[in-house]
Length: 201
Ligand code: 5GP
Image: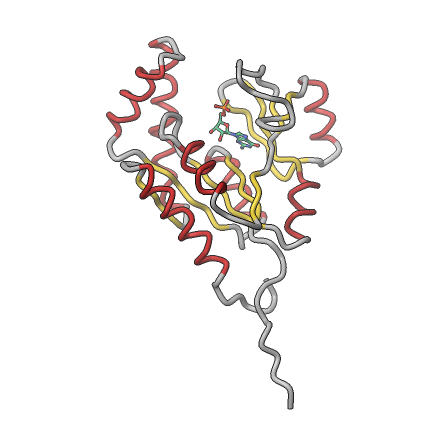
């Protein structure tokens, strides 16, 4: 009798990372992925204009409103949302292709999109990055010097709503120390790779 030992999942795992503006989620995510094989970050499409350092196809695909609407009509997005008066969406085909090839994929998206993905694909693992205290967000947003006081207030209001949605996530990371936060995110990804899955998933 031959015993089949290799019953672990072949399909990639879909991860979602969210967190309020100013929490440092880009840094935590980018540093974590630098240390890991077999995982990529999805590149979203947006109608927001590029910031100075942003490159098309790397940070985002920058679409016109018309192009974005065409892609919606063609069902080309896994999910999309309107955030701060611009559209953001996850292109479906590259995510599906990577998962089918066994590569894990991370979506760095806001909470409404995250909860849509959770409903659509229940095997998705959701990770929320929070600040050690709400006041830290305010200090970081002011310190970045990128936004007007009104814009900062607006981002803080959105942040309150986002923090309320934490309970819908599977994992919570507090970013009070960058190295610890990076190690924790890597540990979550590694643990998920070792989870025994029911045959159907
Ligand atoms: P920013 O304009 O600062 O790059 O992004 C604003 C917010 O949109 C962030 O919370 C970011 O994670 C989120 N976001 C980026 N891409 C997507 C996406 O494809 N879908 C959704 N739902 N949110 C996204």
